[in-house]
Image (cartoon, rainbow, N blue to C red; front, side, top):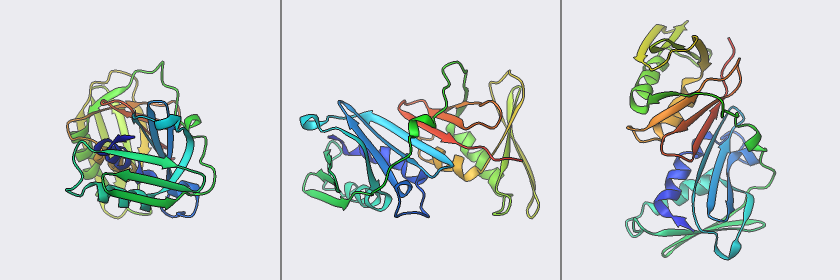
Length: 245
């Protein structure tokens, strides 16, 4: 059991990372895990991963290691929980059985078939960053700068260079079709320069799921390893692959 608004936030922060092109398979859904007082949901399309963990109550020791619900089911659930008849303090009761997932809140009950197949061992994908000092950035100016840089990208060349250097973060792209871009934002950074290339859509999806006043922590990886990003409200982890070239 979990507060409805908390569950909606968890869904919003993960559903964008499902593999929408393979809806019949495990990556086309969101994976739930429930044990004790912890509820986590995670989604990945193989190029990025979004994981949100929160507090909840597992009734009658109901424990689930991996239960996959379709993105469509969760979209319908979020829409239903927006109904005015659902109070802001209402709780959602979740149950995941062998073949079905069920969500119940007030007078609303949603049943759906559980997605078959095994979800990846996603915890192994998250980089270990205990010894790393993250780069902290405000969400709103970061999102604004990335969206500006995204204008010059194209389907054939979607990447933007994120250049971390002393005192600033620069976004650079030499668009073959739409011209060049160079955008800078101030940054508390005093390490060796580091350049990473990302598909900006993967970053904007993550940042749009946050409050505008949130702060994010970016853990700069060695070489071209996956990049781990967290939010300052805790329990939210995003992992994104950098692009080559």
